[in-house]
Structure formats: C-alpha cells, structure tokens
Image (cartoon, rainbow, N blue to C red; front, top):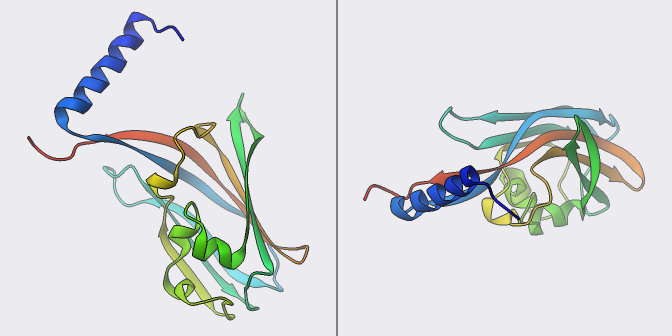
Length: 185
C-alpha cells in the first residue's frame, strides 16, 4: 500500500496527537433509522424500535426496544442477524451472520446480548408474557472486532418460533473511530 504525502502526514499527525495527548481511539457503531418490517400479532404487539443520541457531543447512538409479548419466550425462539454492506448506493448482503437461541442471546452473547441483559431480562429463561423495555442499548466497544469487514451497512434481525416469523426489522449502521483524551496533562 502506497500513501501519498498528504495521507502520510495525516497518519503521522494523528499518531503524534494520540501520543502527546495521552488519549486512546475507541471504535463504536453508530445506528440510525430503526425500522420494524413485520410483527406477528399472535406472539407480540405494541412494538417500538428507536435509535437516538443523548447529546451533540456524545458520538454514541443508543437503541430502545419496547414490546408486549403474548406468549412465553424461551430457547425455542431463534434470532438471526444478517449484515448488509452499503456499496454503490445499495445494500448488498455480506458474509457476516449471527444466529442465536433467544435466551442464549440475552445471557451469553457479548456483541448484542450484553446490552439486552437488563430489567426483566435479568431473570432466568423463559420470559413470561409481559411488557418489555430495553433502554440505551449499544454494542460495547470491546466486542467490535478490529478487522470488521465493512464500515457502513444495515443490520437485519429476524425472530422466529418453530419456523414462523415473529418479528423482523433493520437498522442502519456505520463503524466509526474517535480519539478520546484521557485527561489534561
């Protein structure tokens, strides 16, 4: 890989700033445009899926999910995540996929499940019919692999129960990096 003078200068400058300021670079996933595509009224109702930021200075976006379950949710429910890459003004399916049983996702997964394990989901499985609210969910920086294959795309999620669609939706994502200063020196 060859860098021109301007690119080499930018890389050297950022490295110097990082060393002198005593900061670190964090990776985070920016999420926007949360959409529910379908919901099976036999399993759940009253669903809401949003993405928001808490302030202009904060780079993090947080996802909220609210819904009312009508049946007990257990490991017979399966969640599939499909990552699509944004290329040439369209979303193309990538090779990154994640598949989980419902309870395993919430209690064992460090990528999505770590932020879902809150409130009523701290109880052991199965989860009885009730109103569920998940606030301020974000993917932990430590869970994002350093060699993630693309920086802009869409995450599709499908929840199924014994072959029947229960819920489907997607959210647009962008992988970002930001210099965080550790303090004044």
